[in-house]
Amino acid sequence: MPPAPTLVKGMRDLLPPETHWFQAVEAAARELFARYGYREIRTPILERTELFARTVGEETDIVGKEMYSFLDRDQTSLTLRPEATAAVARAYVEHRLWEQPGWTRLYYLGPMFRRERPQQGRYRQFSQIGAELLGGDAPQMDAEMLVMLARLLDRLGLSGWTLSLNSLGCAEDRPRFERALREALLPIAPRLCGDCRRRAETNPLRVLDCKRPEDQPLIAQLPTTLDLLDPPCREHFEQVKQLLERAGVPYQLQPRLVRGLDYYTRTAFEFVHGALGAQNALLGGGRYDLLAERLGAPKGAGAGIGFALGEDRLVSAWRAGLAPSDPPPAAEIYLAPLGEAALAPALELAEQLRQAGLSVAAGDARWSAKKHLSTASRQAARWAVLIGEQEIQARQATVKTLANGEQSAVAWPQLAEFFATASGAARA
RNA sequence: GUGAGUGUAGCUCAGCUGGUAGAGCGCUGGAUUGUGGCUCCAGUGGCCGAGGGUUCGACCCCCUCCACUCACCCCA
Image 1 (tube, rainbow, N blue to C red):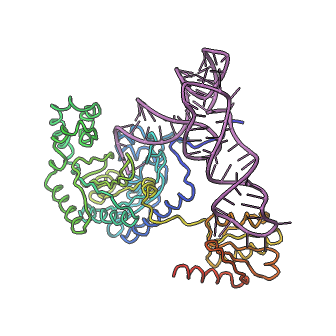
Image 2: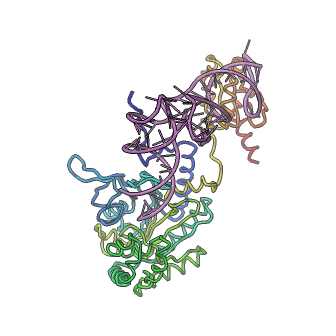
Image 3: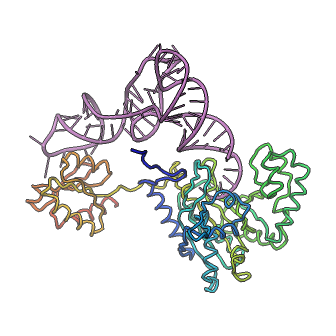
């Protein structure tokens, strides 16, 4: 026999109870986003390669070496989305959403794909939850989103996050930044690490983001994007910071925060967390004033701001001990049909209980009572319901409370009510 | 793409300077033929990642390959 097929590199199976954590993150996010007026958008997982190449940037790592791209049968190059902002912007333009009243608030969640070398907190398929606020460039939008994100992380039970904040300047600032940096780099570049020497040529902004300790003293002397902002961008950033302070959201100015997608302008941010290992960015995003415009939105209508949260990383932080609660059991009631004769009536009862809103999981009618009880307690059910010959005769069920071993006979019609009151009593 | 580490039972791992494998957990059964969790007993379980080499003899040493993990890079 040939070897059984296994997981593709960088992909993983999420098994219960881990899936519970993903559901919990998603539910919390959906609920919170709704309070801020966001509604869900679902874009395809497959897009034209061109979309990402033109927006994320030809020279970025994502486009340059991490995309899952292939030729469709009609020779169109398609790509498994490596991020969702470009796709949302595409949809925003394609469906002329700016014609709707007010700013457009959209959120999304789902899998993204990047062909990188896997490591802790980084997979080739990973889930992101993100939101986009489109249709303007008011600093108020930036602040609204950052406040919402702070609330989200608090609500998810994560303490100890840090918000790093920077402004990258507008499109007009960029060439100035790069010229200034290149100039400043000329004398010191030879003393920097190999990567930085390369970046000094290709993408000078990136040098600011270098993490090598030995390079830090030199890099500290370089001008930052904040030093070079033009007056309107400086004013915009000031207002964002003020609004954050008014809202009581703490941030750390991080003048060397540079993000890896080309469409970012002005406000850029990251929420990082210490429980995550080397890949400590839990969530990142920024403003993109020209993204949608480049895809065909009218001047001014395409500006916006967005973020993406790494769901896998959030769950990993939870698993590192920050989880707000235990995952629930498979079912609160375990049903034990004792013998084939008990099967049909037992299953009927199970259906009645489910219709009353209870969760019920049954075992195999051929199992021994001992195996049933053992299974029930190991599945963490709260009650075991035994239906055997005696019970059928009496039209009753034997209900055992697993936690304390108490057992009672309950008439079939009273079963649902029995569990309802027992649940209520436990909560009180 | 680069570097390092690790591959032994379903899972987590032990295995001394080379003498052809162990534990815990799990699973099955029993002590309790309709009563779980705790305990005790018994059983089940492995081409020691793959291929080659050295050796009388290799889980152990050498080479090649593969996989996984972590880190760099980059990012969520």
